[in-house]
Amino acid sequence: MACAAGDVVAALREAAEVIAEHRVELTDLDRPIGDGDHGENMNRGFAAVLSTLEEVPDTPGAVLKNAATTLISKVGGAAGPLYGTAFLRAATAVSGKSELDAEAVVAALRAGLEGVVARGKAEPGDATMVDALSPAVEAAEAAKGDGVAALLGAAADAADKGAESTVPLVARKGRASYLGERSAGHLDPGARSTALLLRAFATAAGRA
Amino acid sequence: MRVGLVVVSHSTKLAEGVVELAAQMAPDVTVLAAGGLPDGEIGTDYEGVLAAVQQADTGAGAVLLYDLGSAQMTAEMAVESLPDPGGAVVVDAPLVEGTVAAAVAAQGGADRAGVAEAATAAGAAPEVSEPAAAAEGARTAELTLRNEVGLHARPAALLVRSIAGLDADVRIRLGDDEADGNSVLALMSLGARKGDRIEVRAAGAQAEEALRRIEALVERDFDE
Image (cartoon, rainbow over all chains, first blue to last red; front, top):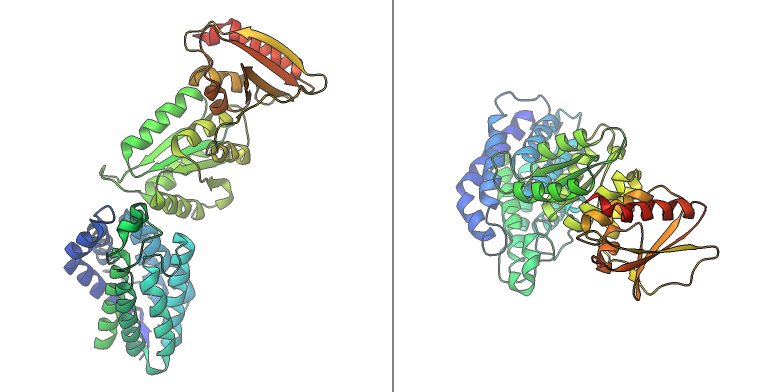
């Protein structure tokens, strides 16, 4: 299968629902090591994205770009510029296409990762969303022969593992980095929300 | 036309406070606060920052300073989305000292690069140093400070502004310490108080004019 604009919309709806469900969990993860607003910020952003999906742009790239600008203006915390940049770069990577095949979805994911790295200047091992997104892109690349739903499933699995890998790490970027050694022993909230989003995309793709 | 400044902070109050402080020393510079979310909550507001940058740039460009990590990201995004991203620059500088130094540089007519450099340099320890050997043909004057607060923030800013743009290398000396006459922070670090005698040394084509202006300023008690 390939993703049309409507499928990307369905994926964003699923993402908004999952984020709303995990709002408290994300904030609880953020509280001991950050400013305790990640769940609220993400929920505000994705609720705003949801409200813009009534009128659906006609290409996947346009849908992603619309989500990007909404996240940038509505999220408020670091996640706004980071996810906003990720969606914006993904949109640019697939701009003009009416449908996304497996190759294009991987290209969008990779562009998103590059955007996050460019914006936040984090590297793998810094205990950030890069630790979930980076292995997810590799897994998606490896699974792209099996179709969009399968590659997104593989990406979500890898992101879950990647997010778990942040637990022992000492944060080197973001608010948690101010805690130094004390930031170790916590699941990074940004890595967790990245894994949740990829799982939501995989779920939506599996239903299509 | 002067370079404008935007203070990007997570907190409305913090941004406004920094602006208040900087504006006192640079009355003709547009220094705008972009702090907090629209509802007053803690956070950074991309659209608010973007609007502030566009307002602060009156033709000579704008310089953005920020408090914490995500404020930097928001500021960078706002600059990238300008019709002309080259019109503004985000600088890595201490928020308070950097904004004050940038505001004074902008007041003195520095261009965007000069204002950005003044902000960045504020992060280094103020350049109070051992006196250097007098330059060839340097002129000196000894002046006694009669104003109440000595070379405190406002008078130091006035001194820097009085000689901005002159072709003169000005050093101010108090006892064994010497400061660059172009650096508000260095001048403040001298700790010169009422009654102290400072030595002003100027070299360069307009050294005479620089000395004359500083003498006049001291005689006027920095307009206190």
